[in-house]
Image 1 (cartoon, rainbow, N blue to C red):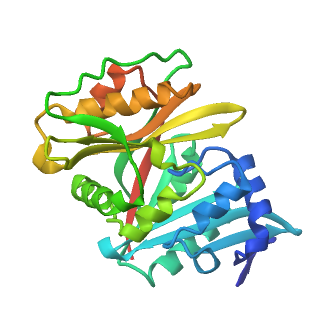
Image 2 (cartoon, rainbow, N blue to C red; image 1 turned 90 degrees about the vertical axis):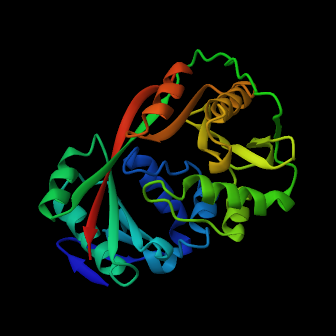
Image 3 (cartoon, rainbow, N blue to C red; image 1 turned 90 degrees about the horizontal axis):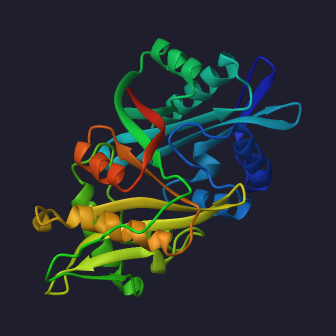
Length: 305
C-alpha cells in the first residue's frame, strides 16, 4: 500500500489476529474503544457486519512486527465514518500516516469523519488539531470502586423488571434502542441483524439485557449490561440504558440505571464501568449517586472530508 519512513502500511489479514491482539494489549487504553483482551473476543468484534476489517483495517508493520493500526467504521446512514488509530511508538510520524490512511479511506464512504482521543493522548491531540480537526464532544468514562453495594432500585407501580427471554424480542429491543438514542450525538441506528450480532458476541448475553415493561407488556426501558475479564478481574459494564421517549418523565431513567447496576452487583463483579456524554448532567448525577467516579475522558473530533 505505502511505505513511510521505516514502516509499511498494509491491509489486515485474519492471520494477523493474534499479533493485533498483542499490540492492543501493549498499547493499553486509547481512543474511545475498550478493545477486548482475548483474540476470540477481538475476532467477534471485527466480524461485526459494518466493520469489514480486510477492507477497513490497516496495520503498520516494522521489521516483521505489527506496531500500529488504523480502522474506519463507515456509518453511511448518518453520513459519517469513525476513525480509530493506535501505535506502539509515541512518535507522531506513524500516527500522522495512520490518520492520513484512514482519512483517505473515510472520504470514500461519507462526508464527515469523527476521531476520538483519550485524555492521556495529549501529543496526539496536538497533532489532530494541526491537521485541522475540530473538537465537538467529550465523553466521560466512569467507574466504581471495588466496594459496591446494591442500589435502592424502586420500580414505579405498573412496571415489571425481567431479563431478555429470547431472540424473538430482538425487533422490540432494536426499536427502543433506535428511538431512545436517535437524538444522541453520533448514534447510528442499528438493524435487527446488527442487534442480533451484538447479542451473540462473547461478552453479551440475553441474561444481561435487563428490561422494564409497562402494564401492557410494552418494552419501555432497557439496560444492556456486559461482563468480561480484564487483568484477572471480573468487570461489569453498563453498555447502554434507554427509555422509550413516550415513557419518559416517569422516573424510569433512574430505575433502569439502578436495576441494571444491581443486576451486575449480584453477579459479583469487581467493578462496574460506563461511558456518558459530558453534557448529560442528569445521567451523570444518577451515576454519581450510585458511586461512579470519573476515570478518564474521551474527546471526539470532527473533520469535513
